[in-house]
Picture 1 (cartoon, helix red, strand yellow):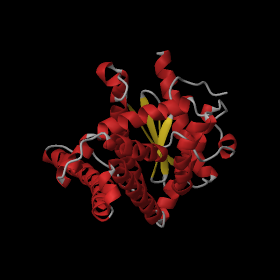
Picture 2 (picture 1 turned 90 degrees about the horizontal axis):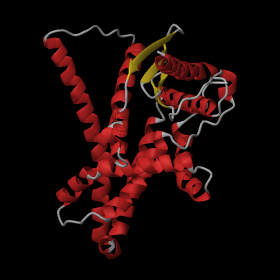
Picture 3 (picture 1 turned 135 degrees about the vertical axis):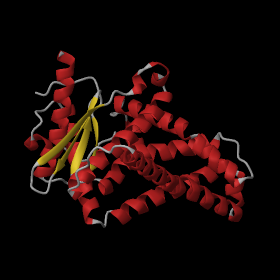
Picture 4 (picture 1 turned 180 degrees about the horizontal axis):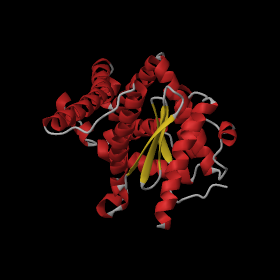
Length: 307
């Protein structure tokens, strides 16, 4: 049996690999083209358990930012292994140039995300409200159209990228991540044989979280004052993101605690259905990678507690 720790183990699929996170560390395992496993480990203690940042709602926004930071680092490492590049430590002006392009990459990525999932849905809702008086008069209908537009864009994006061969493999690693987490949560030995038997769908997946965020955004936006200015509505929705993320995080924790409740099951069902697109059945070698990240994260975590 695997010794468990009081923490919801989570992870992320990357290029030819999986990142797994324990309370104070995260491990990224990537399959090199020669068949070997390349690994990176780093310490990362969440601020969401300290002082002000540990307060309900607040901690959700903190967790989201931290997950993005770790995710970018994991993707960066997997990309280096996948392309065969070896980074050397940058010194002098090269260090600042490298840092600048890293920041630029994050800014561009976030800008595109906001454009696709904030600007376009709001624009669609505005145009529909000009045609249908009911949408203009009932703000909840306006926000429901905004939410449906987000879901359509999100699903369209997933279907589009799933055509790519590399993304299909990422989805397989996503399935391997879920199967490995289930193996751990059931207290089974972390073996490929045990992981293979588990389902590739998990209620605490990031895909489910995105769906919860979309639903919560409809509710939160309904309580925001509506302006005649598109720009004001747009920026008020961006400003409310931390609140929406925080509420969604608290609901995700609540749903995990009462996952057998019928109402909770119905609410998380759409997220699980979407996982049929974002996860694929992994092979044994992919399960090996996910389990390696999980075991190494747990090993360093337990070793740290004994010291």
